[in-house]
Length: 88
Figure: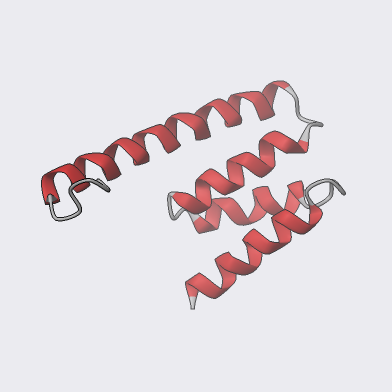
């Protein structure tokens, strides 16, 4: 895409690939969070993927749960703030 920024077909293909990859990652983190419910890293990563896929309503409760872990409190809060700003 960087080499041919005006190639719309290539751009479309890249964004479709990126969306599919993100959806795959989301499903993997969802499975991991079901298997390791006390590990908020997986919930945080799920929230990031949901945000990237514009699934804000799903991302909010997931990130709020991840925010209970001190390791992810600041990062999850920043993503939630971006989510709030983006919705306006």
